[in-house]
Amino acid sequence: MTKRQLRALLDRLLVTHSPPGDEREMEELVQSELEEAGVEVERDPHDNIVGKVPGISAEDAIHVLTHKDELGTIVRKIEEDGKIWLEPLGGAYAWAYGEGPMDLLGDEVVTGVLCVGSKHSSALSQRVHKAKTGPLNWDLCYIDCKLDRKALEKKGVTPGTRAVVARSRKQPLYLGDHVAGYGLDDKALMAVLLLAAQCVVREGPPPRDVYLVATSCEEVGVSGGAYATQELPGNVTVALDIAPVAEEYPIELDGRPVVLYKDTFIYHKGLSDHLCELADEIGVGHQRGLFRSMGTDASHATRYGHVGKAAALGIATENTHGYEITRLDAILNCAKLLSAFLLEDPPWEGAGAPRASRSRRRSGRRKGQAK
Image (cartoon, rainbow, N blue to C red):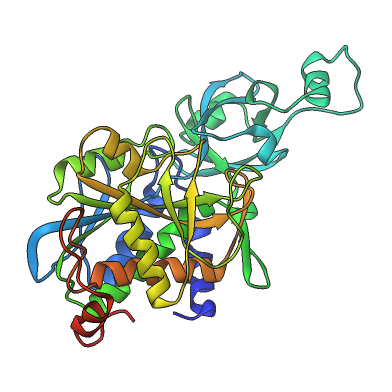
């Protein structure tokens, strides 16, 4: 896929609304894209979208997990005059959004403004004064749609309704070879999953069954991935997620895929090492990441004992859980690495088994496999 084609895919992905528990727009888009690629698709009882690419063997299936929910909020209270007060879902920080348009996902999308209040005020206006003198939090701001409570109820906006950054603020911004926007975590990684799906179907069949899972409710507890890995056959899991660029991590904002070795749990060293070697072999390079303040579908599923061996691939990203920035070639290279791993013949043998030489792996690939 060219960068222009990737931009067209990101244009579709990034404007979707998919807060935890109300992920309908992303579900429809992902299901449509997978089916168009020729992948068998179904929805499981946890609202995960599960695509299957049959392999030569049904033994030792592999799962690829990418979450389809974005950060968002949930309506806590609506006052008589229509002021809407919110609770965060996942690591959604009010100060990362600031005042501006928000969309409420009622029976229809209702747009309002995230407000703090007039800044031409003193300590007598206590709530605004707190927002002026400290970090903005959700107790200090509200959404105003200029509709009263009864009018909002008629549109399906009630306590429990989800609210996200408005679609008008979600159009991606392209800065040369970079893309910026809200929700690259998860949507840039969903692009990786969809690109890999196209490649595996086109160049396959893979040596073993592949399950491509768009997981639900990752941002609020990583439950979708845990459910999927418990129910699906197979013992090898690879998650896709962002890799934060921060002072404490040796991660650079470039096009190399990031192989995670630790976050809230540890990943399988043999599998992670293999992904690093494979990345170098196919020419995309790699970075190794260990992160204190994050977790993925795979690390949580491993912690719960649902998978045997887990790894995670990331794309280096700035401003994570805010207005995020990554590189287009990072997305493309991560998809290349994932595709090469899924199509590798013979497949990765696992820890303790004798490994085929690199030359035998390369010569043993079937015609058309990832190079």
